[in-house]
Image (cartoon, rainbow, N blue to C red; front, side, top):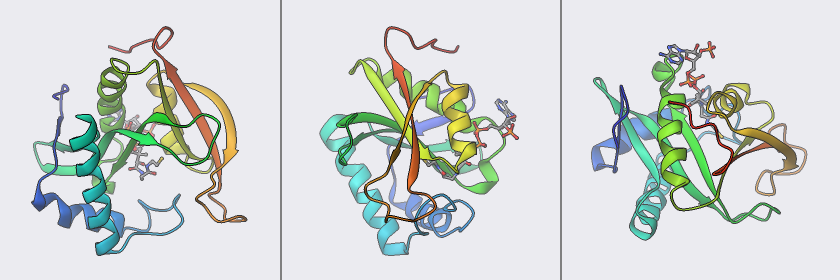
Length: 175
Ligand SMILES: CC(C)(COP(=O)(O)OP(=O)(O)OC[C@H]1O[C@@H](n2cnc3c(N)ncnc32)[C@H](O)[C@@H]1OP(=O)(O)O)[C@@H](O)C(=O)NCCC(=O)NCCS
């Protein structure tokens, strides 16, 4: 998929090195339990590629004129929560790609694509991850509730999460 400034595409092997670098960046991973090792990062790419093979959509690799930036896209969430299984929109960009509106631009395209297949898209992040839930608000998602993420250890500062939703019949569909 193409947006005004971005290409959202399948993954290539050469994306794995810059993806591992951003997954090892403690600032990018500040609101996750821990940064990822190279092997954990590669295993994540394997899961992303399997998701594309199964569903035909997924966490697209994002690039601008300068090359690979990270991902934005769709992923089925199945962890134990009342709103799951749900199709989640998510994003993770290298620090050099922040502050340009790229996540917002790509997320609008992802939500639009997702709502072709399902009635509701979810998005969630640690309550501390203000940058991320600001993307959810900018793209017209509605804040729904808070929950404890069952895959984050109890007592960990990023365990409390906020849930946003976009419903097909009420999402404002930004241009
Ligand atoms: C979450 C994340 C993608 C948000 O990045 P971001 O740059 O803040 O968000 P956007 O790409 O939508 O850009 C918005 C910013 O660009 C600015 N901007 C500049 N040019 C813009 C343009 N043409 N259009 C829109 N916004 C623009 C906006 O003013 C805003 O800046 P501000 O936050 O200082 O007000 C990024 O912080 C990230 O990758 N974090 C690590 C991974 C992560 O936590 N992922 C989410 C886990 S659930």
